[in-house]
Image (cartoon, rainbow, N blue to C red):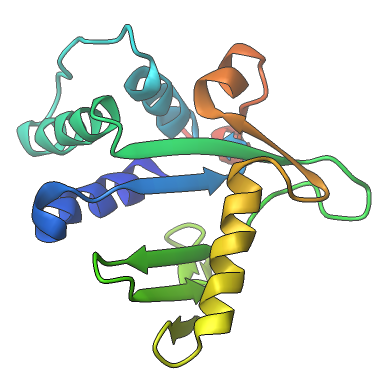
Length: 177
């Protein structure tokens, strides 16, 4: 997960449910240096300093911090804890719900690892009005993960993971100049 992706998602909040949208994310524990440093500042309740840099970037980051401070964005960290699975948590699932109880869920993504390497994956999308049992299963799976009830992973609040030195830099820092 990157700040760029999180800010992009958050900027869309104003378009959903009159600004009442909530986002709960579970991600792995490896981050680019800049992303980890900024995420730590954003989720630190004591951090109130305005960001200094490019105006548009600052506006996006400030809006992101406002959503975090209002409790509209929550982030948890999943760390694999078994030799039965790879050492990186990378599940991609999303669930959107509206006020009437309808839901859309997706798994997978089409993501880019860097500007030079592209990772192509498929995306599976389904709806509560066409496949209610599948939506209910995805919601239960996510809630179990959020509540740390999923096998082979340990889930922590972001700042708890930071305090306990569970957050790691991804290996890209070796190649940054």
